[in-house]
Length: 85
Image (cartoon, rainbow, N blue to C red; front, side, top):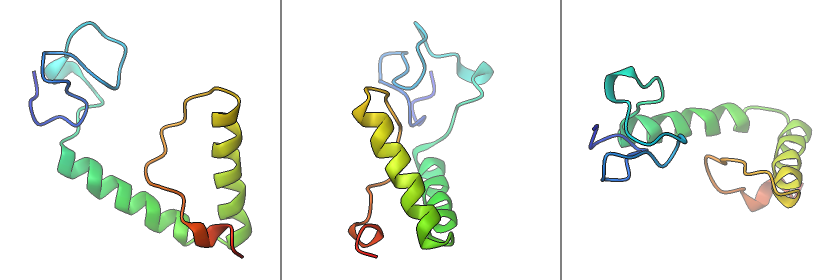
């Protein structure tokens, strides 16, 4: 088991994938907590660089999906200023 994997549940299981046990070196989703945080920052910067109307469209799509019961893994909280424009 990868103890430093962001998806590890600490008992040889995974909180991200629906598998019975950690796939270890065969897992293509492995990422350390630090790598996950770096990827989240990169994603936020990419979204922040989009035009305001495109940002609103993306956030509204995420919210709509969650309202209809589909789990959407949002990488960070939705900034209030996106809806204030």
